[in-house]
Length: 307
Image (cartoon, rainbow, N blue to C red; front, side, top):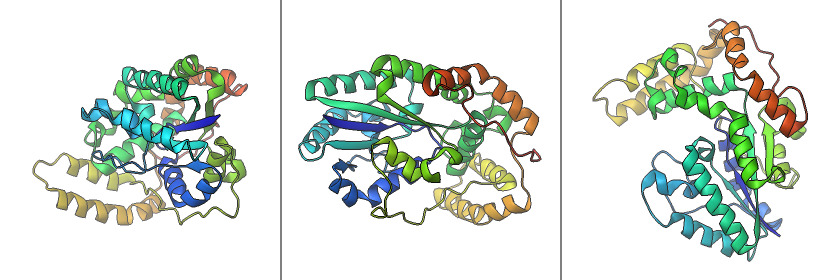
């Protein structure tokens, strides 16, 4: 049976690297019966690499017909390739009604056109997810979190709800069935062969061999300490045109990594991180037990860095 693999994130779990890898290795994937389609649709602040964005774009952009158009293309591809891969971390973050509406429409398509759907998701420890997500917002200058102080950000329920992994996985599992969910933990020591690429290929039934090329990964450098706070302040400044934002961004990012080495720190103290994770203890334990058959979901060890 033809299979549509839908990689839904979560955000800050190597999604850019995975998407770029699939594009860079399109030919070898094709030879093995897999296709990673790129669609002509363009969305504000959404890379074309995120080829599954059309699944939820109609609510975002108010444009009709993209779901139908995209699905027609996938059905056409199934005539040549038994496996199609889609990826967009925005699916995990989409609001509940939008996401569930999309899943129901996709389930209807799978029944009408006779293909199977498998959903791939990576989970990151919530305290690391929170810090990384805020860093990305501030760095990009996009979203409510781009101008919020750290203290304001950690109190915003919109972001905290995304990290209730059990609730989202349970609802998705109830709709699709447990066997159609492929859940992995975003912890390097758990990656197959220690590689995110080998691990992701395994989720779609492939092995990482010498045939695949791994381009030098353009790391998503995070801002550290004061570089991040300077950028957050700039995000708040009225009348600062895009060219200036771009200039300051390049300047700050050029020494962010060195700043992190010279002044290692974290947004959460060790005690704060432990207290924060205590709030997710019960739901994480449910995920571990029901989806992994284990008692603990994440490795909870952490460095004791100054706040």
